[in-house]
Length: 411
Image (cartoon, rainbow, N blue to C red; front, side):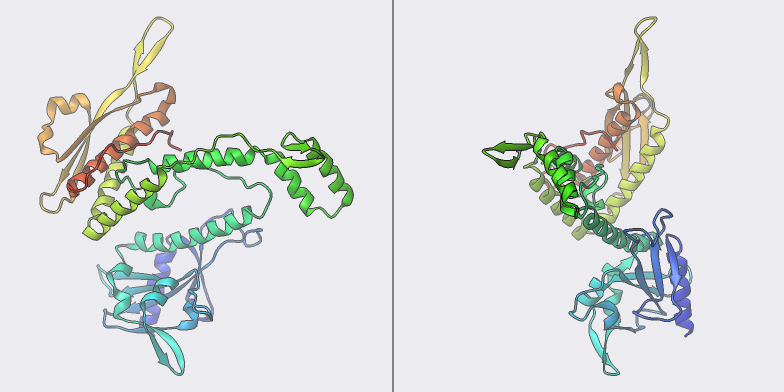
């Protein structure tokens, strides 16, 4: 009982960092806690209510401790995992406790079943303490749980939007799963750009028929014959409807669809190189440099501005500036030790570039008309080149050609 209380206390402290947490008065469906992503704009009375997750907490003194979870808490009668169920195991106390987080799918696929009191239970033992379920810190545990809930919420939203008339597709390059935003070198296409181009062209093709689709939707829902007749007249007069020999056709749209043939190769390359990183055990090093580099560039960019050049008494222009980024790596493990940012004139005067394992120089504010966003795009491209160099440094056998980079404005 003491261990159970300790596990619930540690789990509650963890979850409250990011979720709204509700404690059940009784333990049903294996749920110590019900959680909801914090969003004050979402209410249970909304047409699309918020997704709720169920969290079962366990505390283990060490990895020899075993627990049991009723099978019915994890899978439905047909054996399909119940989405939104999470098991959080806290192991040990003190300065370095360990955490393991498993979803219903991971439990059903990896843990064995034991019959207790004529009922099937999942055995929470050594298989649950596998390295793949271990989370490095509280942030990683919360990311895993939140990511699952966000995916389910997005699936709900997509089904809902596609059930109404014309969905409002809000396109942004960053609206991709995180693995596709990783700056892995790619010779075929810059994946966020390609997806954005494809979606933009398809959205324009869809919205080209916005009026006619709205009318069709209203007609399909209408139970008023007079209203239906009025809509039919409007459809017959629509520029998107063609009449030929008394028969009406939806006119083909001439809008260009930018369907990228390079995207398939780019995705295959991205996943292959992500697998190389993962299998080599260097994924965490890659993430570490990626974060250090991003944080440093954000901080440094705040103090950058293009060089203003006066052309006459009444006109002026701007000139781009050169910057450099140097990365020092630990010799044996290639773990990133330091990342330094320089104005080009500073690095040429006072910095011995030999001390850096990776050194990359680029121009920022290459198109002054784009303003700060254009400058950040240039900085983003410099970051990606550094990451491509780091990947090549880790895997020199991987033949990397001309890497594609971001062309669109950052959003």
